[in-house]
Length: 358
Image (cartoon, rainbow, N blue to C red; front, top):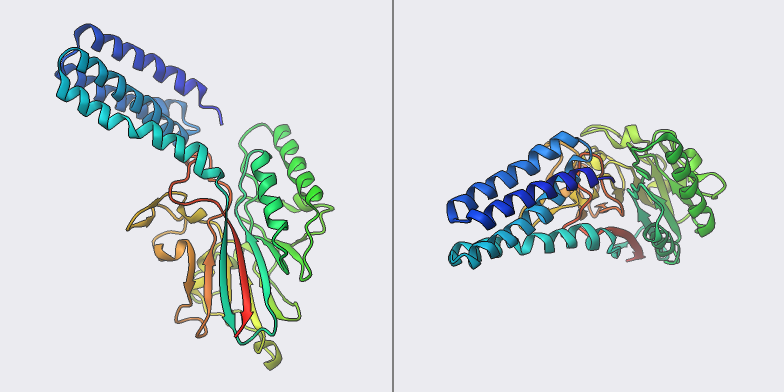
């Protein structure tokens, strides 16, 4: 993502303001300079439009943070020591936070293990679920995600949608699609109960991403008898419906006696009645930014969907059978374009779910 023009303009603004402080520095001028610098971050971000969110993050964490540190040092040397120390204290955490959120946490992939005990399975079944790889490149990080997925000795592997998000030239996008497909082919995904890929809201015509991989692409809702369990794979449309839809139930007594797993890209289908024992979804990225005691700052699902459901494993709702669970994975990629490419207290996740006999 190209933020170079934005950073160059802000660099010039910072240098001019710091030069003025060095010449005529006092507390009043420092306050005015701080306000100007902060406002310029917003203004220059809007001027360059995309990538707006990333511009804001880089501007606040690095330009504004370093500006506060250097301007505070200038004031301290000019005998305004209390204001100078105050400015440096405000500034020091910002670049540290920026480095953590931009360069560490988004690539700190975690294996999240979940265990469900059920009388409906006769033997342990391991499911590996990944959603929202949502990348604009194929780097060592994406390859590591694929390797970790394939190394968990899973009985069933599920991809939850939103594989790429790229806003460059069409030719570059085509190259990215081929590299993504090549990485999947090289990894040779296999699982006894199958490997399936759903459609996400960013995918469009995504079937070619999985060409020659052996991974089954799902675009329409269907239920499959896997032997030890029933598996319902939802279309993007059906996973996006609220409350009374989709009404999906297994019909025969034999089918109803089996563990029923349902998977969709969006978790809004959790609000509708089903007979699923476990429901899986992605889409939210866990919010990417989680505020302690509040939760995800954004879910992309609107106010009708409970914020607390937007990340993690939860017990079922009144619309679902007793003992049911649903899981929203944090995904492995990041939202782009208007959103900043950062994570905070929301590490990327490969979900490993073990369903074991009671």
